[in-house]
Each structure stands twice: as C-alpha cells, then as structure tokens.
Image (cartoon, rainbow, N blue to C red; front, top):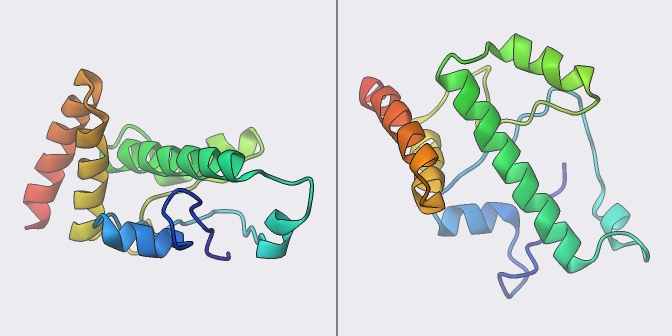
Length: 136
C-alpha cells in the first residue's frame, strides 16, 4: 500500500510523517490484501483533496475502533475479520494483531480518544490505560 498524501499538512506530508509528528504511529493491517497505487488517486475524476482527507479520517477512525474492540475483548480478531468481510470491507487495524500491540501504538490510540473530547471516549481511554499499565 502506497503512502497517502495529507492535503492539509502543507509540504505534502505522508501519513507516516504525520503520524510521527503527532506521535501516533499507525500500522494498518489489512486482512484482505489491498493495493492502491498513487496513480489511482491522481487520475482525473477520482478523489478531490477534501474527499481524500475525509477518506483518510474515516480509515483512521475505523482502525482505532476495530483496535479498541479487539484490545478490550469486545470481539476476537477472527470474528472482526469475518464481520468485516461479510459486508465486503477489510478489517483495518491501528496495529499488527499478529505481533500484538506495542506501547507507542497503544499510546497513540489513547491520545486519539483523548483528543475526541467526548465522555464515551474517556471511558475508552480508561479501559485502554489499564491495558497500557499491563504492558509497562
């Protein structure tokens, strides 16, 4: 999968560069092998910069949501994969579930939920903080 450009970052930063800048490193794990060449995005009539940014945000939200559900044992990874493939999409994660979550990845997920500034997400932070404490 090619690095996607963030149009709002100035200087054409890639997702990886943005993630490093915010200390949110996301490793997207796709159950189905999906390749999207940058030229696919660059073709006229494809996504506008705004649409691309919205799509990237939706992917990020999905990765964090899926990761949260698996990490807090609300769903097993295999069941998540089955659920997502059943509706024709990939099970995207904010970490590689085959290797397990790394401390910095979990910290990134927690930071994402803290930044949402909604009560529901603070409860998620508490659950994820317990997992982080077990890693330390």
